[in-house]
Length: 387
Ligand code: NDP
Ligand code: MG
Image 1 (cartoon, helix red, strand yellow):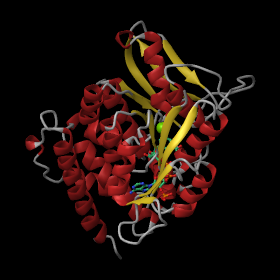
Image 2 (cartoon, helix red, strand yellow; image 1 turned 60 degrees about the vertical axis):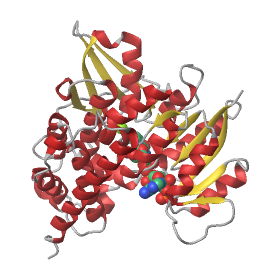
Image 3 (cartoon, helix red, strand yellow; image 1 turned 135 degrees about the vertical axis):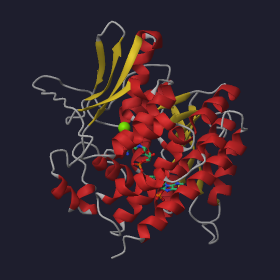
């Protein structure tokens, strides 16, 4: 029997990689739902190839898309509820991916999760819901996919440290002066991974690694201090674990998102995969410490993770607003961390935040309200930059 798969964010970088895996392993998977936000053409092209799959276009609330295409968030909600997918691949970019993750679990599907914001913003809610529905969350983010495998191999109890690797982005060796002049086009050119615009900018500022520290702590239930970062420019070692006896184990492959997507779709099987196979002969692997002074979004993420409560939501929302303003050329590259630091320093009355006792959709409302307030605070601050 083929696994029924929904691909959310099917027109993006993760979505395209997921479709490559589905095409290569067509005997195993049957696509039942695709979503995109505004890219109707991409969605219709997929429909030509997979006519049985339902289509949802989330970014169109009012205009009528062609007949049969579900529209808006309401359409996606219906699509997920009716698709009866065994597995939902969530490749939606940003905070908008959170609700679809919850809907997928609620509908009884396992979640192949690329959308890291889901865990950053709502780890307790998502895990409570997955447990209630008896579903699995399989990380697709390459570092977390590697750590997931390493924890399964060695047992969580044996592990004392999760070591996330970071490419260091395109500006690893740049001075502050050089960083201050970086344009959006330069920031979008990642040295080892081909990804969507938001995550490419985050890789250049190290906010992506910051989000991944919070993601790792949330996914694997480790304290933030037990999650460390090693800069590894080749992106061959996807992450490592240090056991209590001091030994370090790593997972290596070519940087190719199709391998972690294959693993998540096939879980718990470990069958042949056409992607990411590595020839290690002649390879040189380098490691260095991240520069926390030049890339303050990494220490700010640790601060958000340690403070907990609403702070990971605030960090993420302020960073999303900062990146959007940078891409729109309203602020410079070095202003993005300034925006995040400013918004995090506001009074968030964190004492009143209690997610553990909230129901799923009540918790979601609280998170989205905090997300909205943090974005508003960031946008108001960004206006002060218009020179
Ligand atoms: P892209 O920007 O390439 O693609 C995003 C997808 O989500 C598109 O299909 C887009 O539709 C859709 N989308 C955008 N905005 C919304 C919205 N508001 N509501 C619903 N759907 C939306 O992103 P990536 O594929 O690079 O990243 C997706 C997620 O995966 C992110 O969370 C990222 O951090 C994570 N990730 C990505 C990796 C990568 O290699 N790219 C690696 C690890 C994690 P449309 O095309 O119509 O705009
Ligand atoms: Mg990653």
